[in-house]
Length: 294
Figure: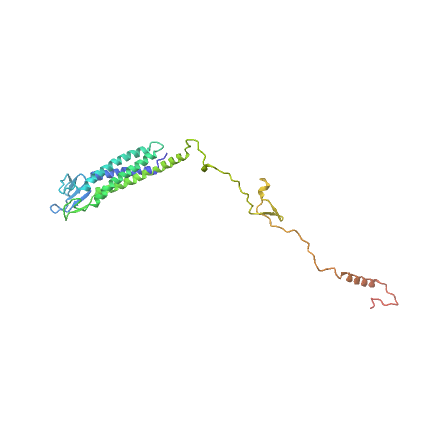
C-alpha cells in the first residue's frame, strides 16, 4: 500500500522541528544585549538558557561569561529550560511511535499508532511554543529578565526565532499525523456495523414488517381507438409493441337531408317540353297553317 500523504508530510516536518528546537535549546542566542557604556561599541552579549557569550568584531566569541545580573535565576529562563527539555523528549517518543505506525517497509501502516504519535508530537510542539512565547513577552522587561539599565538595549536573537519555527513545524507535523485516525475510525466503525449478533434476535415491535397490498390506481391517460375506450398497451402482453400516444376520436358518419325539394316543378316543365316536341313533329296539311309558317 502506498504511504498516505498525511503520514509522509508528518514524517518530514517533525524531524525538522526537532532539529530546530534542539539548536534553540542549546545555543546561547535567546536575547542580544548591546550598548554598554564602559566597553567598546562593538561588544555584544548573547544570552541563552545555559550560557552567556561575549562577541566583539576584533576578537572571537568568548562563552562562559559570568552572570552579573542574576539572569539565570529569572523565572522565564527556568521555565524555558524545563519545558524545552520536555519538548525534546516528547518529540523523540513521538517520532518513535510514528516510525512504528507508518511502517514504510511494509504494505499496511498502523493508522491507530500513527494517529497516536501525531497527538504526542502536537503536545511536544505546545511544550516548546509556551516558553518561547513567554520569554518573548518579557524580553524587554528588566525586572522579569534582568539586564543593565539604559542606554543598554535588548533585542531578539536567533535562538528565539528558531524556537518559534521548530514549534510550528512540530504542530503541523503532529496534526498531519493525527489525521491518520480518520481511516482507522472508518474501518473500525464499518467492521462494527457488519459484526453478526451474538445470539438470536428477539422479535420486537420495531422488527415487525407488514406487507400492505398495493392500491389499484386508475390510469392517468385513457387510450382511445376509433372512439372507443381501450385498455393500456401493457394488458395486451409483452410481445405486442405499445403504441405511442393515442388517436384522436372520430365521430361516426351522418346522413344530411335538404328540406327544400329540388325536384318540385320538374313535372310541369317536362310536360310542356313534350307538348312542344309533339307539335313540331305533326305533319302539315295544305288546308291548315303549320307552326313553321307562323
